[in-house]
Image (cartoon, rainbow, N blue to C red):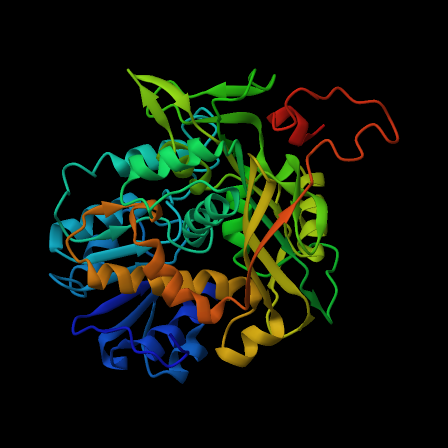
Amino acid sequence: MTLNTKHCDFAGRMVIVGFGSIGQGVLPLIFRHIGITKEQITIVTAEERGHEEANEYGVRFINNALTRDNYLDVLRPMLGKGDFLVNLSVDVSSIALVEFCNEVGALYIDTCIEPWPGGYTDPSLSPSLRSNYALRESALGHKETYAGGPTAVLTHGANPGLVSHFIKQALLDIARDTGVKTDVPTDRAGWAALAKALDVKVIHVAERDTQVANQPKKVGEFVNTWSIDGFVSEGCQPAELGWGSHEKALPPDGRRHEFGSDAAIYLLRPGASTRVRTWTPLEGPFHGFLITHSEAISTADYYTVKEGGTVTYRPTVHYAYHPCDDAVKSVHEFAGKNWNLQPSKRLMMDEIVSGIDELGVLLMGHKKGAYWYGSRLSIGEAREIIPHNNATSLQVTVAVLAGIVWALENPTAGVVEPEELDFQRVLEVCRPYLGEVVGAYGDWTPLEDRGRLFPEDVDTDCPWQFKNFRVV
């Protein structure tokens, strides 16, 4: 595949809901890789931001925030059978849009499952009901009913999304390097059996963003390399993680859900105040935020092995995210103001002068210890190959493109999660935009250098216990 490969043609109408950094970044990818004209695309967004970029491509731009009361009236004239809704918004219910698309026969994709405004922070809801776990269970409630209907791809950005395909490639790499003979699994049971055979106990989405701008963060300003509203809303939800079968005890503030798959737990604290130890090949050891993400739940659920209704294998899965340094400063200021958002927000784009986004999956506990597989993409590379992107956004936008392509090639798949897509096809579409794609082994464990300054309560019998990863 090359940067000029045309993957497929599309004759219908496409509506992009939300046009922040990801919408602006995916538009040139759509025109480059899908046979589509500017007249076929309409942008519907809550902000004027991005209007200039839409004009650059001659795309219709409508500044009209979708709400519970108006979304059907706004979208019905724009979408019908065979059309495509690309949902890149915040504060618009993903489930409502999936229901609408199924009703009219349109295809659908999003990068996360969003509630209507207030759904993440409503004090009348329990932490369990404000979780990604609950949102996912609600969305999957349509899976059986919508089977064979128009494809609705849930949560397919970089993470959740692309990382699920990294995990499958990483499992095959580990099998090859440890002498475990396997064909490429073709179903969920096969992949789960492979992960169990390899004894993968923990999977981190381990990401370190080192992008730096020539304009430092100011007091009262939240700065980030991707959607600030998205990051803030995720960071204010309870920290969530898939809960592995090797774990000996729940954390003191850990809670199980009273419904659904039981594949994950949540903590009684927001993700933006919860840190974990992790590792990437270039950065080495670091502390990352345990921000809730759908892949922590869907991955743990997908790789679960049961015998007679009893779980015999499941990995612990969670995000471990170190954003750019200015974003870390922004989070500290945000937390210090009792989670009241700063009055000013700035998305870093043109002012970035250096840095990379090292995004991958870290699989631990197998015979070779730890294996990281993922993308190292620099700001220079991102700018060179596609406009309106930085290193972080491009890892998301190309995954959105791949999800659109897969849906167009598989238009009657119903409601699907990233784990159900063809990982080889997705990686084929994405790889030209991911910079250096690397697999690297390391001997790191969360016990490294522990107790060097102060004695700590750690579990030395099993280094892969969550209590050893968590920073307290």
